[in-house]
Image (cartoon, rainbow, N blue to C red):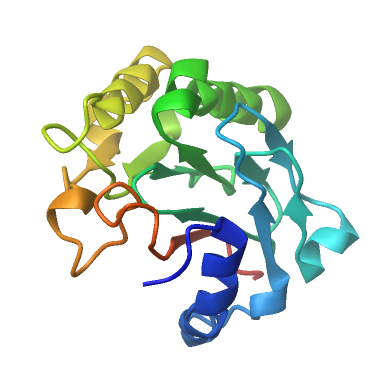
Length: 195
């Protein structure tokens, strides 16, 4: 168990996250992350500085269309949502809990991918991470995310969610609610390798 402070939790888990990233061939200092304020801010990562890792202030979503740029989100009950356009090689990772889902951060990200990179929602693949769900939580925001993706034009057979509840398996997943804030953070990463 770690402290309730997100920065402290991420700092304490940094060696484990770095090891996991290294096993994937990703330098830990090349990971771009978001501050995660339970909002609807989304940023496109693509400049030279983004190859050496940034933390985007005030953001909950990260998008890139450049290979070798790695995006990461930390979660412990909220969902990490991966959105990938395999045809245009554009990807995003979004932090979406109750508030972010109500604010529509996932459909906004799909819209940004369409507008900025020409992504066709019909070609996207979406994956919702393990997150807190009923009956452990009063809102089924994972279901809302799936509905929002479908309403944005993503075919339902390309929207994936294993239905895993973080609160039901604290031995395997961090759960902010179950562990009363004294928990760690899981790291969700996405990116395309350089050719």
